[in-house]
Amino acid sequence: MSRSRYAGRHRAPAEPSRGRHVVVPIALLSTTIAGGIVVRSAGASELTPEAAAIKHLSNTVAGLGLDVREQALAAANERPAVATTQVSRELSRAAVASAVSLTDEKTSDVEAAVKKAKAEADKQAEEEARRQAQRWVAPISNYRLTSGFGWRWGRMHPAQDFGAPVGTPVLAMSSGTVIFSGWSNQGYGYMVQVRYWDGTVSWFAHNSRLTVSVGEQVSPGQVVAYSGNTGHSTGPHLHLEIHTPGGGAVNPRSWFAQKGINI
Ligand SMILES: [Zn+2]
Image (cartoon, rainbow, N blue to C red; front, side, top):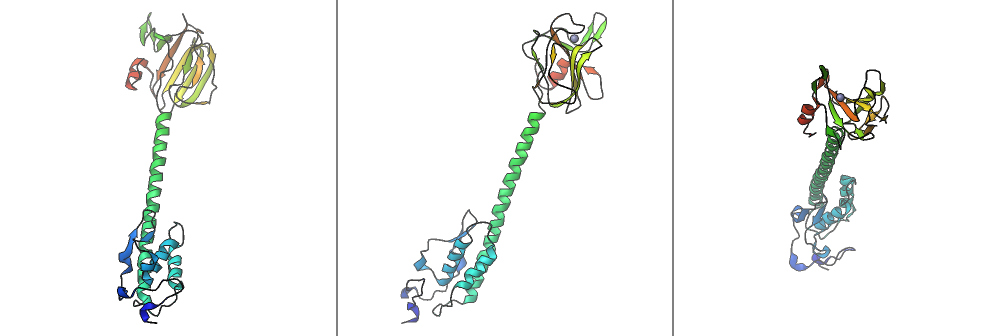
């Protein structure tokens, strides 16, 4: 049997016409998007022992999470010495080492990309949740504006009145905490006060019914009361005061306009 007609347990006889099988195995490699390595367009019977080793390695390390280096060394070692090969075992080991190095690099690239994409998705979800929690909404719908902010009958009216039928839902204008909910002795009737995330406080007065308690967390649009005609009131309406952080009552219409809310 000639040296070139070796028939091992795992290989078909090499074709004599191929001559010296000195190849640079790395040249046969191409990376896959999965981070593994494949031997491009080469059937098993066409492979040199080194390329076959690389292909075996590729199959071995295809899954992420394996101990790639250990698997590669095992793959290199498990091949029996082949007397007919023209390429040294050292070259084979070097090629395997190169391949493993490339695989490690690709694996960490993929892991880094996955990690980055996940972090970006988390960040966007957080940002969206924050936007939702911090959005502002009008406190009532189906109303008509009655008394506005300013002097009225010789007294300051530090509020906007919304004429509405008794029982119209009154809504939290954003995320916040209920700081008052009960009967007011100052003429406000059944009143709710909410302090929002930015320190702004809204007063909802003259309600018929209250649905929240002091200390309760509320979210934008949550029903906190139903409008009414309690306290010093001349007709069914919501009396809304807006107190900015550290300041007094401001004109609700101007304040809403700054938030982009038309009332
Ligand atoms: Zn009023």
